[in-house]
Image (cartoon, rainbow, N blue to C red):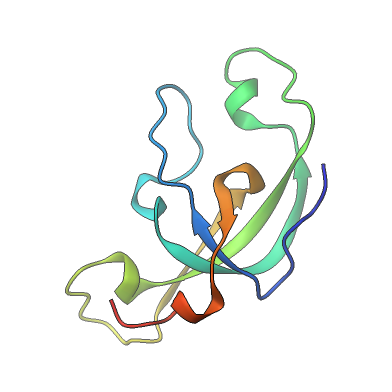
Length: 103
């Protein structure tokens, strides 16, 4: 699998809600974040859940999200973040100017 995303890249989590075993947190879908690092390449857990091989391997990224962008009315500091591990097939590139803008 190609590693198409580099640290610092702005991404948007796909806003998909397929049935079955999904490893992408519901509360992150549709939101924008920034790639922190590549965690590695692993068999696809969504395929493994059905007894398949999980191949080809998928790139898994650590993605940083601003908490004020995730939670309406967030009362913490504007700089608070959440880091989540998300597989590449759930990520689309996003315009840099959008990440971190006020909600």
